[in-house]
Length: 383
Ligand code: UD1
Ligand code: UDP
Image (cartoon, rainbow, N blue to C red; front, side, top):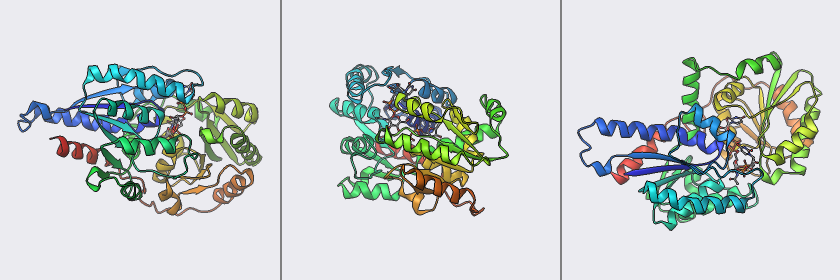
């Protein structure tokens, strides 16, 4: 049973890393067990990265100790979606011809996941979709991710839905009940794994640099952003809001700036040179997790961060018009604010000075056991 995990961007790598390790662990147990005599049902696990991201992907590969068997190295500066899609489609044939997988696992809603799923379908290879069923039903928000995830759902044979809502979306679209498993989001598995590593003494090489730069006795606001539908006015408005918030000298704003040139251009032009706004390079995952744990508030359009933050009981202002992650909003963890500067500033001020319950609620996105459930399903289905 040959399984090929394919991914290409930072968040996909973070969310597939624990699954890769769980599958490898299962393969190891099979090889030591007398029970799995049929060699065909033993797992052989391989990884293909498209490298839609390069530096931001490599940071994750390093930390989670994943060495790709195939690396398509497709990233080009400021690549267009069509160039990127064409490159991935054309390069996957060689990978499939060599790896001959029985099952390809893709993740979420990126160009990598949809193009790899389509390429696998063209070769008659079964596709499992991790983080399936998230929907806004607005194909321009998030763009192009909403269409990507809907297309991948039409292609996939197996759907690993993180939440009940995601499962209901898939059922309503006619996906068979037996092809859907509710697993929780694998990002929580990745987060727990990382926290365990940090507790066990993993050296956060970037931590000292941050401690020297940032006054952690103040309220730290962590900012990230990269969504294409916010390029231009959306990002300019976000910057206006950040400048306004920074007038409060009780706060320190830390902003690891995404490497997309469309983001870098606006953010550095508008926010450089303010003493309590720290524009820094993207952080490696464990340092980012540590920084989240030290923050009072997060302002972000990231999907992964909306899912992780409830584990730290930190509120997230979601700078988007729509979200497919309603569970966090319903539970009072996140707040959909769009990119209107006034709204961002008002809600920031309100949340910074309101008391949050000390009681830690369960994270609505997962309990850290998603990968276990996915591995179990694959074993039962292919065993
Ligand atoms: C992509 C995904 C998005 C995901 C996001 C996570 C698509 C269409 N978009 O958006 O769904 O939420 O990643 O971050 O699949 N770049 C670098 N180095 C890197 C990464 C990016 O220089 O390590 C620059 C390059 O100039 C690249 C550009 O960023 O061309 C855009 O990268 P791309 O993957 O197309 O889009 P993202 O905005 O990163
Ligand atoms: N992240 C990181 N370093 C950073 C910023 C974010 O490791 O400097 C992690 C974050 O914890 C989350 C993921 O990257 O798990 C989110 O990635 P991104 O916002 O790029 O994509 P999205 O989740 O929106 O698809």
